[in-house]
Length: 274
Image 1 (tube, rainbow, N blue to C red):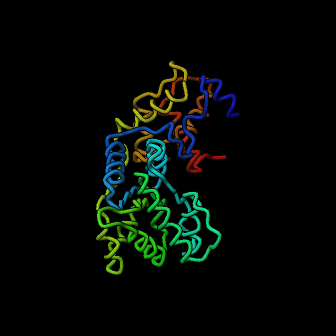
Image 2 (cartoon, rainbow, N blue to C red; image 1 turned 45 degrees about the vertical axis):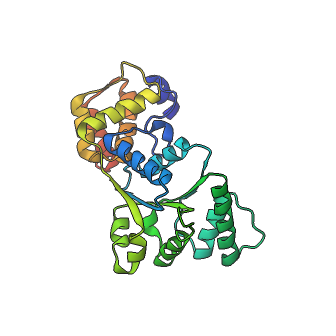
Image 3 (cartoon, rainbow, N blue to C red; image 1 turned 45 degrees about the horizontal axis):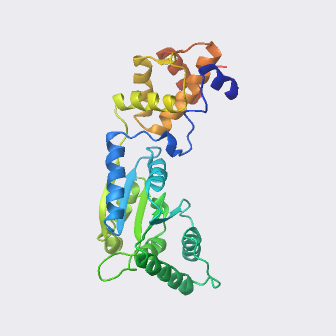
């Protein structure tokens, strides 16, 4: 069914997949600001950076785009699963940086990471660790992350750490017990949802990237309903638009109307009467 719907619209790929594909990144004003803040924090060696946003707001996609934009002088590691033990976290970080160590105990892993960072500094390189879904980090892991930030010289931080998470992350970092970590965060950014006009631009951008038929049209009232339902959250926009294109294919139409959107939303919400 999906292959037929792609062919019907002249699409080279599904424009509304919910996977974090950086090739589809739409830079709203706030996304541009977030990317600029992250880039500034890394190149200025600020140490700790915090980026928050609602579920599905595009944080992971933004991070992947950031990784693609950094040059080869910046070494990176991306942790997507924060549900790890202290030792597993250190092992995952060293593996992602390509550090080869015979011993896998905590002290040797920490020492190996420190040596790697010093070697990268001597080469004029920057090293960045990104931890996604950081709101799920246990207090013990947050403390370990803080200790990692102690790896520094007299003039610069050896490791730039970006904590990415849902709004709860900011609340967690506000706890008195984490004040030492909070005080080290020098760059903060909160990613907000898209506006109505940006929702329209976002849909058109993704259709263009996927080479959609130029006659495919999302009517203004259809976009408005998509915006009302999704509240400007990119992941929800993708879910609705994917259903809408399938409905349009079934109806054999290139005109995406409010009726098709409403019908799709009802299906998503399980409101269709059988």
